[in-house]
Amino acid sequence: MNKKGYFGNWGGAYIPEVLYETFKQLNQAFEQVKGDPAFWQEYIDLMATYSCRPTPLTHAENLSRHFGGGQIYIKREDLNHTGAHKANNVMGQGLLVKRMGKKRVIAETGAGQHGVATATMAAKFGFECTIYMGEEDVIRQRPNVFWMEKMGATVVPVTSGARTLKDAINEAFRDWVSSMDDTHYVMGTVCGPHPFPEMVAWFQSIIGIEARKQILNQFGKLPERVYACVGGGSNAMGIFQGFLADKAVDLIGVEAGGKGIDTGQHAARLASKDASVGVAQGYKTMFLQNDDGQMLDTHSVAAGLDYIGVSPILSDLWEKKRVRFAAATDAEVMAALDLTMKKEGIIPALESTHAFVHAFKEAPELKPDQALIINQSGRGDKDIFTIAHAFDDPSWKAFIRGKGEEYAT
Image 1: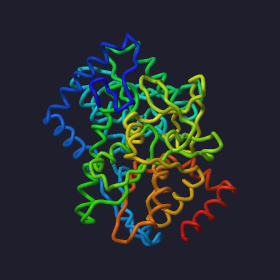
Image 2 (image 1 turned 120 degrees about the horizontal axis):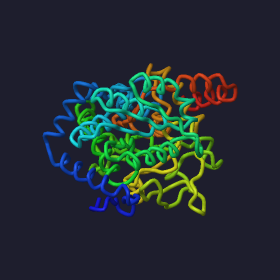
Image 3 (image 1 turned 90 degrees about the vertical axis):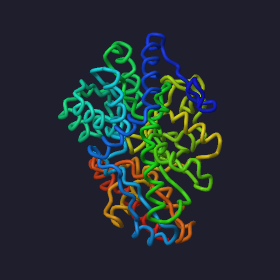
Image 4 (image 1 turned 45 degrees about the vertical axis):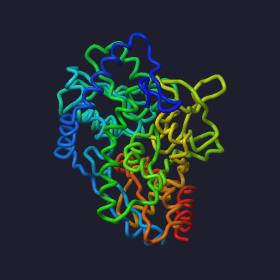
C-alpha cells in the first residue's frame, strides 16, 4: 500500500471536503497505534479476556472422511464473542475511539453481526451508538436487531434503494458528515476510504496469525488451501493474512452466487463478468454497476454478502492472481449447511457456508496427508428463520437432497 491508501490500482480516499479533517485525525490516530506495541498488546489482552480468543481450529473428521480427500479444518470464529469475526474489528476500533476521545459511534450492518458487535463494544466502553441497517435486512435478521436494541443501540431501518447493505453504508456516511466532531464511524469491513481497509484488515489479522500457528501445531505443516466467504472481505483478509507470504498455500474467496451468476441475481464481483471498475462510497474497486455507473441491485440468501463492492485489497490480490475467486449459489449453500450440521453438529452462518460449498467441491482433489482450512466467520443462530423457510421450501428440499447425494459421490 502507498501513502495515499492505494493497493496497486485500488483503494484511495474519495471523500467530501467536509470530512477531510476528520479523516486526517483518524489517519494520525491509526498511525500512532499501529506503531505502538503496547496498543497491540492491550488489544490482544482485551480479546483474550472478553472475546474468547484464540478461537479453536477444529478438525472436521467426519466431513474429511465423507469426502475422502484432504483433511478439513475449520477456524471457529463463530465461537468469538457475539458469534462472529466482527468483534475483532469493533473492539480494536473501540480502543482507538477511546484514545481519540469521541463519545458516539455509528455503524452499518447487513447480516447484523457487525451491528451486534458494535452495540456490544459501545455498551462496554460507554459510547452512544446508532446502527444503520437496510429495511430488508432488519426483517430477515430480526434476532440481531433485538439484541442491538437491548444493548442500548438505536437501530435505524434504511428504506432507500434496495434497502440492504449498500444503502445502510450511504446513510451512515450522511450521519457522519453532520456529527463528525464527537462521532466515529465504525466501518465493518475492509472497504471504504483509506484508512478503513488497512485498519480493519490489521485488526482482523488476528484470525490468520492464530490459524497459521494452530495448523502447524495440530497438523504439522501448512494447509494446501484456505477458504473464506467474501462480502466486503474482512473475514477473508483476516485469515488470508496468515498465509499471504506462503506462496504454496492457495487462497480462495467465495462470493454470493445467489440464484446463479448467469441470472443477474447475485453478488459476485470478482467471480463473475458482471462487475467493472468504479468509484463509490469513498474508494475505487470492482463494483456491480451499469454502463452509467449506477449500482445494480444484488441478491444473496446471506445478508452479509449482499453488497455491490469488494475490498480494494482483495481486488489487488485478485489482479495479482494471489487469491482466486469462486461463487456459491443459495441452493448450494443450503445443501452444504445441511451436510455440515448432520456430519459435524456445527451450524455455520449462511455467509460462512459459501466457503464450505467450494471447499467441499475441492476437498476430494487433495490427498489424506494434505489439509485445507475453512474460515467459519460466524454462527447460524441469526439465520434461523431464513434457514427454516428454505428447508420447508419443496423445490429447495429436492435440491438439498440431490446435492447431498452428489457430495457423497
